[in-house]
Image (tube, rainbow, N blue to C red; front, side, top):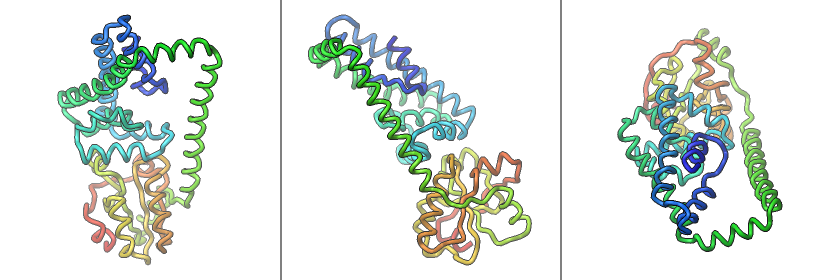
Length: 308
């Protein structure tokens, strides 16, 4: 049961493993379960699920992250945070990913997307899984007496406790959903459609197209819209003083709802750059229509991109 529960939870279903792992540790402390076997099966469940996501990421590419982010209650930030962590720390991210909300679900498929070696993935992910399950099980083991009293009290409360827990969980989901909708409302800004952008490019209009995809997204799919400049979002934000005001600027990213592009476009508009719009559908919107793609014209710092 421990193996199956952890496997399903790490696979993506919103059924928290922490209470079960604490209970397994408590049962081990009361000599009703073998602690070593419980740790082993829990870690194997986590590793099996992560290996599945690793393989899906390796086969499907960045579309996996886009799907996970689309169903996440924290749009875009979940993917961006994982990408930044991998860029800074490499495979070591896997050792602590499960302790960070959102990061655990994204780290395994991203490891597959960047083609991390299978053996390296197994070593780091196994270490992270073991540390994660051990933290809960050993806590339950050490405080088994106190947890037993809590369980007895919970049993006396019966259905009332279940209603309280269900209400709290439901309230948490509603609160996150409300914040998601509120966040997306803030990003309402006029988009330019891929068809409109292509018409402008075919007509020879002076349009500056900026590819804001993270470097890991860009490495996985190095082709971009013809003539687009690949610039990091943070660099473009810092270069707001030298961004041209006399030409139209189109921003695009790889995230659902064009979150990064829309957020940056709103920020730059507040600084007086009004001829700027996100691309509706982002990179996938352009690619899915069969419009031409090419290697990036240049991958430079913000100053060069702004002067182009």
